[in-house]
Image (cartoon, rainbow, N blue to C red; front, top):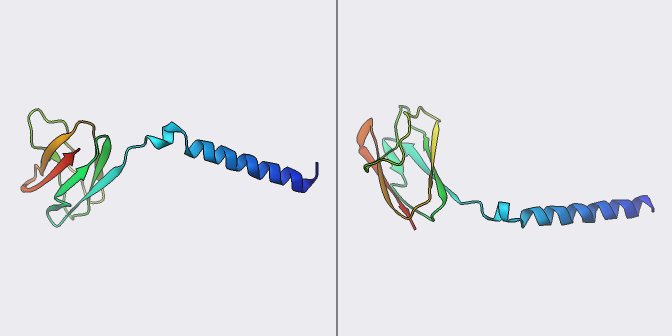
Amino acid sequence: MSLFSTLTVVRIATLLIATSIAASPAFADVAPTATVVIDNFSFGPAQLSIAAGATVTWENRDDIPHTVVEDASPRTFKSPPLDSGEKFSQVFVKPGTYRYFCSLHPHMTGTIVVK
C-alpha cells in the first residue's frame, strides 16, 4: 500500500470515529445550560425559563459577595457567599417555578421557570 493510500485510509477512519462519537447518546443527552449574571445588586435575567434537566450557573460580577438561596421550604438549593468572579450551579430536574434571593441583600430576587 502506498503512503497516499495509507493516509487516505487513516483520514477516513478518523472521520468515521469522530462521527460515531458525536452521534453517541452520551453526547446527545447533555442538558443545556443557562447563566444568570449577578451585577449591580441584581440578577440578570431576573426571570429565566429552561427545560427540565438544564443547569443554571450564577456568576458574581459584582464587587461584593452575594448568595443564591431558594425562597421555599424546604430549600433545594443554597449557595455559599460568592465573591467576585465566583460561580454557583444548580441542575433543575423537576418542572416548576423556583424563586430565589440573595440572603445578604434580600431585595435581590429572581425566578427560574422549569418546563
